Every structure is written in structure tokens, then in C-alpha cells.
Length: 379
Picture (cartoon, rainbow, N blue to C red):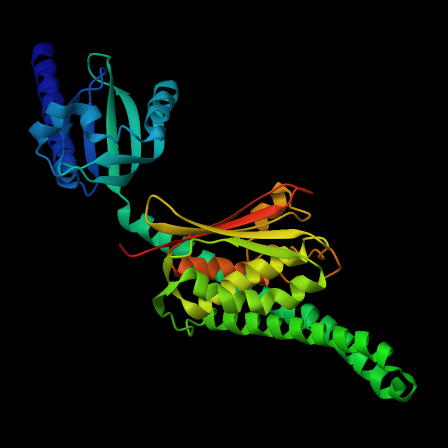
């Protein structure tokens, strides 16, 4: 009688085990998650249809190439994931896999070590493709960067309106009031320096407003871009004339080492504003009696590289790093207390990038600065 009960119990247990295995098989094959099973040595012995679909391979191929064939070997997190799973028995995180066509895609994975019937430590790997989520995350990041730039643009604009325009206007109004109230008592020799100061203030205001207008047009994509071919030396003639008076006031000598027959394809207005801003910047931070040197070369990649070098007060590494940043606040005075908004350098960067080039600066404190920019040329 006891033998019959044992046989019945064993039969029921086997039936339950079979049903459990069948259920597990159905869950494995029909799961919306991709699932792999590996042996203790890391070889794969089973892959469900969803895993085959994501990897673009048959189960036989996945088993054949093994774990090293489906994981991205360049992913630095893969080795760390194996180490953590070995230490804790579990890893949850993001890694990268390789499809059958060679494309790499991001996954979210949960990998767990479990004991099989023989006591061995096998591993289950459940993962999903998160390419779409990554794309959304990247779009959100890009939108956040754009929002940050817009806020920085707004802050810079208000700063210029509130401070950098008000101060020059105050100076100009002060001289104007002086002339109105004291003109009958002033001699010609006394009027001349006042008139010169008024002219310089008005010129600085005009240049600032011109930069502000151009910058505003760039932000709204209203600036026409019309690159044409010019002789560089011919482009520089009106530019050097426009900065001559400011340089002469500080007795600064401007020399150039331009190639006489060099042609350059640029937008004339943008290039003129770019060079004027760089030269005015050099004049501002060069002491009286200093030197500024302009030069040009053609690089091996068919770009024109132009440099503006001065022997002025120079910059430290922090200033160089912030020079072309919109949200940086660099407002140091020139060698004769000239004001600075930082807008000119931002415009220079945008003009150069409009042409597909790069701009950078090299400098040491009390040893002068050199600004370089490149403009790629049609072959």
C-alpha cells in the first residue's frame, strides 16, 4: 500500500515539474523581453525569440559566437558589469550590444547568477533595446542646452542695455552739458580735447550698437551669408583705415605679413566685422607705443589661417577659457581704461563658425596675446 502512494506522489511531482517546465518554456519563448542563458564559463546555451530579433541572429548563431560576439567590446562598463555580477550575483544597468549587421545599440539589462540542478552558477540575462529612449534623452539634453544658450543670450543683452550702453551715454551727455554751460568761457584749445573725447565716445557707442545689431540678427537668423572670392590684401585696406585713428591715438604700430596674391572666399561684411573686432581688441589691451602684427598662411587642409598678435597685457588660462563663452562675464578695462562688453569676441566666434572655421587664442599674462582663426576654402 505504501509503495502505491509513493508511486502516485512521484507521478504527481513529475507532472507538476513538467507543467512548470512547460510554463517556463512558454514564458521564455513569448516574453516581450530578450532573454539569454549562459553557462558558468560564459558560453551561451539558450536565447529566446525576442533576443534573436533584437540581435538580428538565429539562436544557433548567438550560441556559436558567444557573449563576446554580441557585447560591445569597446564599452568600458562591460568589464565592470561582469565584476559586479561576480561579486554580488546581480547587475542592473546600461550596456551596449552588437547586432548581426554590425550596428551597436544601447540596452538596459538585468543579469542574475542562479544555481542549476547540478549546483553550477549559470546566468540569466534579460535586456531591452533603449535606442528610442536614448534618442529622446539626447533631444531633451539638446533642448536644455538651447534653453541655457537663450537665457545666456537674454542675460548678455540686458547686461549690455543696462550697463555697457548707459555708461558711454553718461560720458557723452556729461561732455555735452559741459559745452552747453561753459562754451562762452572755453578757449579753442580747451574745446579741442573735449570734442575729441566726445568723438571717441560716440565712435565706441556706434561700434557697440553695430555689434549689438549684428549679434541680434545672427540670433534670429536674419544675417545674409554671401561668401565670394576676394584678394585678402584688398579686403584689409578699408579695415585698416577704420582702425587707424584708434591705433594712432595710442601710438600703436600695426604691421602685416599677408600673402599678396592670396585669395579668400568669405562674406565681406562678416569678415570686416571679424577683423575689426580682433584688431580693436588688440589695441584695447596693448599699451601706448605697442605693436600689433597681422599674418596669414595657407594650411595643409586648404584653409586660410589668419593671426592677430599683440604685445599687450595678455591673459591667464581662465580668461582664455571664457573668452568665447556667452555666459562668461569678462569685463576688464583696457590699458587706458577702455570699456569692454565681451560681445565682440562672441561675434568673432559666430562669424568664423558661419564660415566653417575655428577660432582660438594663445596668451600669457604680461607677454601679449595672439588670436588665430581658420576659414576653409573651396578646392
